[in-house]
Length: 374
Ligand SMILES: Nc1ncnc2c1ncn2[C@@H]1O[C@H](COP(=O)(O)OP(=O)(O)OP(=O)(O)O)[C@@H](O)[C@H]1O
Ligand code: SF4
Ligand SMILES: [Mg+2]
View: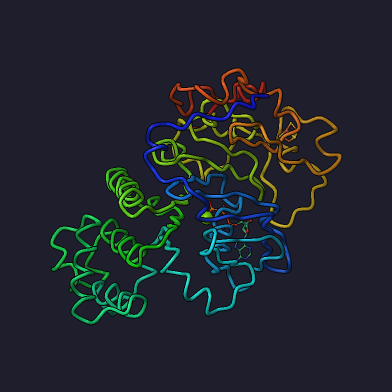
């Protein structure tokens, strides 16, 4: 196992890496009737860092984000774990926080954008009014100041004729324009963390690329940390410093994006790489892997991927599988993590660019022979 610390890239060094923006430890979230849908999830996001959260549909990505935002569905509940925003004197414990804490933190310290921007806007108010209202209530700006700042923000997120857009209603704007409006609202109070849950999934590829470029620019200009949920590994490859791979409610692999995509060390990540060339695999069944992902609440004594894993042994189902620290900022929740991947290439100095789909299922013998669905 490589224990050599990773050498920061030039872009990493250029950014501010002091401290954590978010720390999630041992998070467990249950939904209807106490079904556990997110279990034992731990990760941290450093200041100015972009983290991509990927995994099949139902793996727990949205519930994890909503737990951080304090916006779980009515039946949802954080059973265990800690969520801490910021560090040092600015640290706020969000687990079990009062409603007043959430009201203060949301919008001012955490912004969020989701897949369907229209459903987060009031159809009977102009988009400018909605942004200006946020600036007045959260930042205490006067009516005139809020108008001027809203127009500035609309310009910053790339809306043409921002003064004109101010007076338009949501139904008068395209999906891409609405997402820009939502992003303007999300960053209007200079949050330290922006959560984007499939914010570009419904957009065509050109607009998607523009929105992703906008998020990267805002990360740099506003010093934001980004948690980007997506089904598209190419999006993570382009936009994220680190990747978290979720399966069955758990993070099964994490690490620097380049390293994980070039040299995955968990059979599930390897399988995802095998279908990455077909782009957005999220809503498809991963037919290339026999079997189904576990449902929320499914009780399994050992590895949750075992029923679908070509490498499973009796040890894998004998008891809980711990997260293995692979060094160089990488982890894998697999008993065989030490034997998987090109371990010699891990860690410092590994500069080769990853190419999603380049090594489909390389270390999972059964997968190599499966046809990738068209
Ligand atoms: N309100 C709810 N009531 C009951 N079960 C829920 C609820 N919300 C989510 N779940 C279940 O929790 C699990 C995780 O859901 P979640 O929405 O976090 O998945 P996801 O990874 O975001 O999936 P997708 O890629 O489809 O958005 C799923 O099994 C889902 O069915
Ligand atoms: S622990 Fe065993 S079953 Fe789980 S991913 Fe690793 S090899 Fe496969
Ligand atoms: Mg989701």
